[in-house]
Image 1 (cartoon, rainbow, N blue to C red):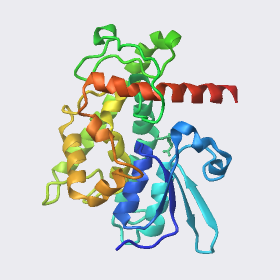
Image 2: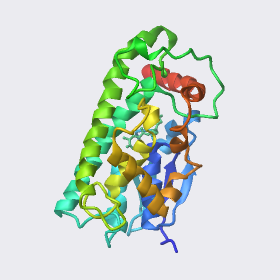
Image 3: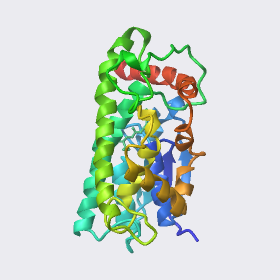
Image 4: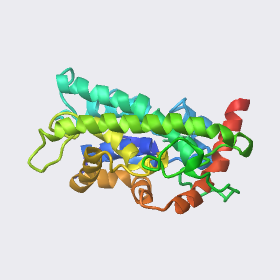
Length: 299
Ligand SMILES: N[C@@H](CCC(=O)N[C@@H](CS)C(=O)NCC(=O)O)C(=O)O
């Protein structure tokens, strides 16, 4: 049975949002979910900015011991808040100050400052998110891979991403920068997981730190699950990442439940779509992104 809490999670089905619902499920906490309509820019409304001044999901509210409402934002801070307050028996954490605890912090920071932003930018230039609520805008045919110094092993083929028509020629450099950096980060992850695989548990599962799944694994998992959004056509060249990704889902009901909050998870299934199908879906995000960029520039 779930442990009662006063938590409300403000979220959407994006990698940063899924980190928190997976952690809440792994901790067995009850919580309310408030879905934020990103495509309607609800995250920029004054009431939400009171909770997260940065105007992005995820954010979380809770009540402290003195009855005051807490506002926690930034996915890394939320994960640390959850384990500090609710993981006294270290189900997804290690004792504060231990060697393993610092290792978890290192990987958490690696994810929030490296993997997330780099993969996010690779996504921006390589492929749009799946936003089924917006109307379809005109969208050009993808440029063939031969137009860019990227290989088909790493990248499906050149995509035009969210850029406006007259700025698309800038995309080759940006794609090179962010997709290759994303791929480098996956290699770092694969090497770390390979080391831990040699000390794996009897089930054969291995984690980023030590003998248990922690907020480090939880922070990284939803981003890896969305690898194709970031221009990586496959993760076959990273066998430990691939095995870790699949086994966490197979073995931990918290991942299965958490990835489906606030709506069914789409990213893993989308990894199996053809390039043409992905391009078709990419159309939906273009207007949303360009509107948001224009508004931020004018502010
Ligand atoms: N550093 C932030 C990033 C949050 C973030 O970028 N959230 C995205 C969804 S994954 C968002 O809210 N985008 C809406 C927008 O940019 O307006 C975190 O880790 O929480």
